[in-house]
Length: 232
Image 1 (cartoon, rainbow, N blue to C red):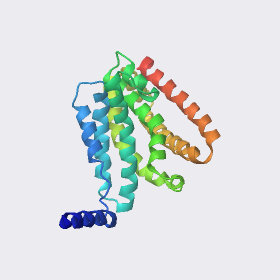
Image 2: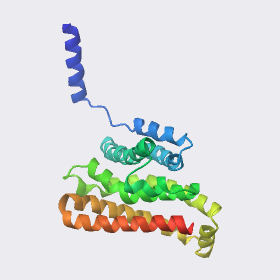
Image 3: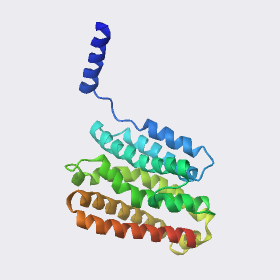
Image 4: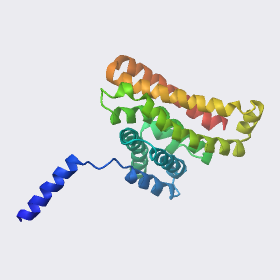
């Protein structure tokens, strides 16, 4: 009896003195499981699974503190998508962020991937930032999010190549712009990232401006959704 109590106390102290590093293993497994299904969610999940593995590969060369900062965001960010999936599986409905993705019929795999990217970056990211970092950390996360963003660019290249091979309009745009359309897409991703950091910062420090900017961002997200559905 006393031995069990002693070892329990020893384990408790060890966990406090030598905390285990954060791991996104559970989230990666969950996204992989969805990717293997034939559900609507699987199209974005396949893409997202590659993104998470790319992040993990990138983290291997970083120091412990940086890995911890990025992994906090990785876990919160992926859970935004997972919650939307579980909610839709359970009720056939989901929140406004993912409504277009899950509840629009007749979409191509490419459209679903692009809608997923739009929902996840333009609506989920600021919330993941808010939930990952305390008020004293939020103003100094630009570098962390930039490092996180680098992994997204690897996947962007894959999606862009798929788009020009499968969609005549995008292929024509790529040809006529001499490839500048690819660079413009990267510019948009960077712009979206900075906007989400701004939203997360305003949430803590300027609530009135936050609400105004969030509503504008939501409207932009809807416009992009409509462009993906109607023009591609």
